[in-house]
Length: 289
Image (cartoon, rainbow, N blue to C red; front, top):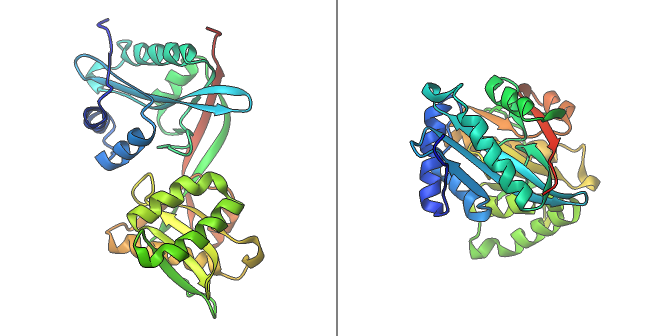
């Protein structure tokens, strides 16, 4: 097969990834801003076939158990499937990962800069490719769906503020960021993205931040991350913050939001959310270089 092409120019790579992916996977389109934001912060590896019929994006993460490779996305045009194109892309990515010192591989879940928390359970071709390459399922992740007409009033003495990078929000942003950093430090990346894009909502009692909810940080129309100060839970503060984010999404034309990579499923289902997507978390060990 013809040698693959590695894209290193970020603007070029963004356009190529979006064009090939959206042509091959029209049921789950990606926007230039979604792909561009991730590649700008974490370029990783982007490979395409010479005829632009296939694309793969991958990256690396470090953990206490060593360096880890992640397949971010892989797509091949319908007309080129079952011709070894996806296997060629995957083999090249694994070779790159091994040369970079990775000892294991995961599919998706490359937080904090991620597109999906795994392989969608309905994406049979991707699941088959991962299994054929040696990956095994290690867990599941769930996205819930919530209609954006969800509405909850904040409890007495609580106000919900949209925070942005505007100067007059600086003190409130700093206080809310301290809350997130103290309780959920891995979410600071998405917190900062939400501030920049004006999609962060924070509940305050006076000047004290109680809860936060972001939306559309990495994927348009996806809710999260969110959190409520443990000392102020079970008061409806988190629900009211989510209500404000839903209202904003509704104004942007989104009828149903996805709550991404949900941990406490029961909390959200009590508020009317329903499971709508399951992701298989696939992983494998890699050979030593």
